Image (tube, rainbow, N blue to C red; front, side, top):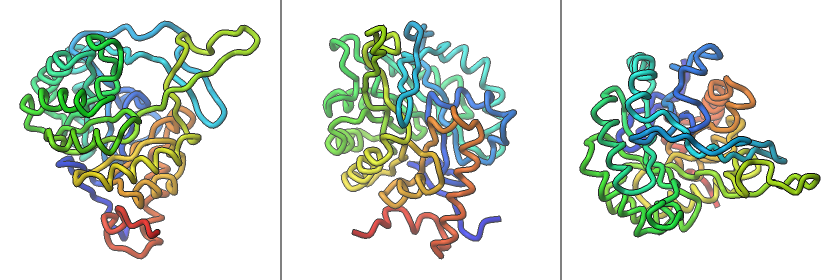
Length: 307
């Protein structure tokens, strides 16, 4: 038993500790059950689902790069109906053990987000809340991310807010963060997930082709951790709602940086690919760090950066 209370409140999602998993890096949770006791975590965020199944992008979809990885999966998913039927029973049991389940919502337009969220709200009563991934390309608007402007992000949030009474988080694209964060807060977002992967390129110089099927992909891993910490700090200082910090967390100290920068919770991403039980180790290391700080409650360390 820790000497420090590790419980946090992520926009109405009551977590027994601040460690979450990043959507798209942890499947639907049950894929990791044979590696460690997933119920030790404060929350998991499931891979994004849309109202209808998405096939995703052609292979190859992932490649290692120096200091991280790049992906172009294209949010392949079975759709909310299949997700609820196939993964719902296991996730409901996980929820009963005190680990909050956050379901990520995907869409290519405002109408698609609303349709998916309506299904989630109906079919997943065990969900503690939902995360809108506004980094999806808006097909109707020419392919730019739905949340790449304050106006676009606000439109999605405004349409989705009446759909559910449960907490709504938003996973933000790494662009114009403070102003988009304020726009989302104004439309009723309960919390923000910062950041999503950063666009990058990886070229095979021998074949002169991209190392993945698309010219660009989402860059993630420890190489972008300092950028993510800075962006979390900017957002935490721009809004009053809580932030979940994501980006290159490989150790408990990486997670602690996010906490000090203003994050209420953190999400482990790429580390779970390299080390399937990384989230449990990071939780242990984060708890040990909090104890070393001599506080009674982890909340005392949120935003405690001294400049």
